[in-house]
Image 1: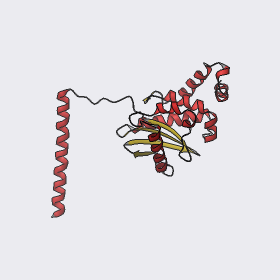
Image 2: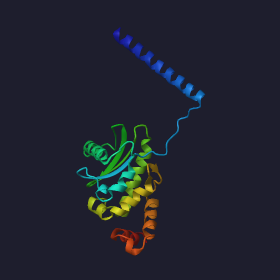
Image 3: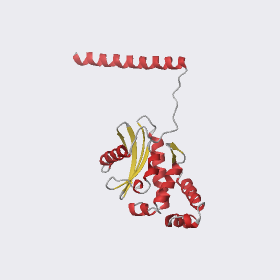
Image 4: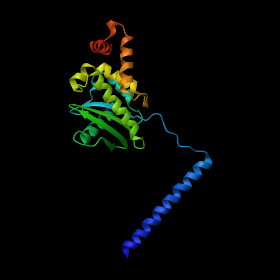
Length: 208
């Protein structure tokens, strides 16, 4: 009898919630409110090593900040604290997605590198996965599938260009690795030979 009463209450509650949602939609429709999908789908991008330390931030600290939403991660201290927590929860996990501190984080790893793309909790995870796969595959192309810490550090500047081509202040620009790498090669060609680093010159040779 108690179970039947509980089931009845649960069913009534579900009906009331459904009716409430319908009413809210009608009110919003009358007021002309429409839910807009934001272009700023990416809140953060990070590449960490096997100890959870940032790879890119060691050299290009100022530039890395642009890949974070300042409202979500207002300071470097908060960014690093989030990254440490994220790494601890994902370094030994088999899943490819996690919800942490109200953020959806998709990730993948190879050898001693961990790639992360972050978005709001209500963001479409397929968008984040597309950005993540493009990032990983683009880096893999540049490093000739040798996706390891040492190789990435040797081509650090190219990795920064890759992120620039994929994401601009949270807006996903490109999801095709070949297109990203091709544009990175063009951007390095715009520099004079004296202004290019060793890795940039090497990339120009590989892409020619």
